[in-house]
Image (cartoon, rainbow, N blue to C red):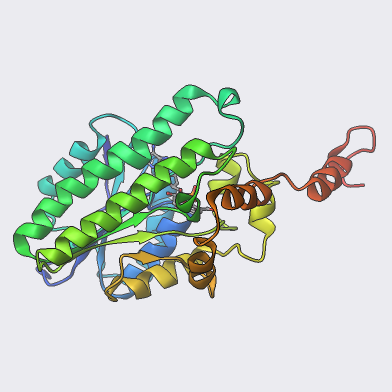
Length: 296
Ligand SMILES: NC(=O)c1ccc[n+]([C@@H]2O[C@H](COP(=O)([O-])OP(=O)(O)OC[C@H]3O[C@@H](n4cnc5c(N)ncnc54)[C@H](OP(=O)(O)O)[C@@H]3O)[C@@H](O)[C@H]2O)c1
């Protein structure tokens, strides 16, 4: 864990709220950071790559020169990652008003063909790190009876997903853990909430390339959304008494209808959406074919 310099002189201003965003240098995380920044929050951004974090900080600082932006370079697949992040915020005497567990990546393909260590890292990130981060910060939020947790899940959390099996299952954990937790908090009459975010395919982030899914139909489907929409709908949902948000116009309704279908149908639909689109594949192969020469 390396702290990257980053503090601006913040003076004595203490009324500002602070949001901590994991995956804060990524597509959805960065869009969320923009909205919190515009609303007067200070930011703690956690991600893996120092240079990317710095670029995001430089882009965001223009929104509000008084805003304090702390950056933490941390690989969240390390077993003690959550404690290190928590230590970092304690060392800076930060009160985290909103925690956003957004860092994530996908593994795509037949399970035997996917590198096992990569899948284990993904489970560590989506399940263990998210669980530990949630617990660490929820404790403080419950103590002061104030706070919000946003856990980024996925539409793939709602059914088994062939060729996206482990990813989908890990996001089911995120969804069900978050919803159950939110129920407990409400039943206890606390002013602390957990919101699960379930986006469909998001076109304009690093996710699809990292998962090797550039050619799948999902990212060209009418149901795909962009990161700005995910952030906007999530931000709006934060203050409504909801435990789940499905970003994108009409997609929540579609999900409510879809969940009435038999699981075998849902798996077939998911399989079809995640299929590689041969039309795009063959066109791109033609363009890149060495026999034909590039750009023909
Ligand atoms: N894009 C989609 O279609 C989609 C759909 C549904 C849900 N989601 C979820 O949305 C969340 C955000 O994804 P995105 O679409 O914004 O993709 P993204 O642009 O790739 O952002 C993800 C961020 O998480 C960071 N990250 C990955 N592994 C990490 C680790 N071990 N430690 C710390 N940070 C790590 C990435 O850093 P690096 O770039 O350095 O790896 C990246 O900055 C993820 O949880 C994803 O599962 C995405």
